[in-house]
Length: 152
Image (cartoon, rainbow, N blue to C red; front, side, top):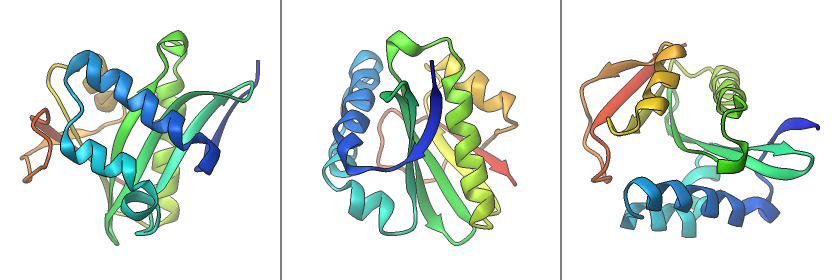
């Protein structure tokens, strides 16, 4: 079994969308801003200087995460999702490591994320990486009720 992290490739765009819709529909619902991102990945995430990472296991997409550029010193980690059949294999760690490495390469000062206090396993994972809760900025997501930041 070969596990590797790759950057965005157009043939995996639909997998980014399907993995994220799966967890959104399980715990919440797909919001208008989610649809905007899914329909405009290149414009919203990639062209401004962000990236999407995929975790492949034997060439099958097992997980994904986006890094959206907020400004020259801040990136937002968003849309972290791992296929249910691959959960429990620490693939989220590989994806977060890729995000941190990416932000450091871009000389960012911090990574921020928005989440929900309903997602206890996700919050525990972020805390393991030393993300700290901060006051909420304005957001387009109804489900988001916690903001966290990691200073690099």
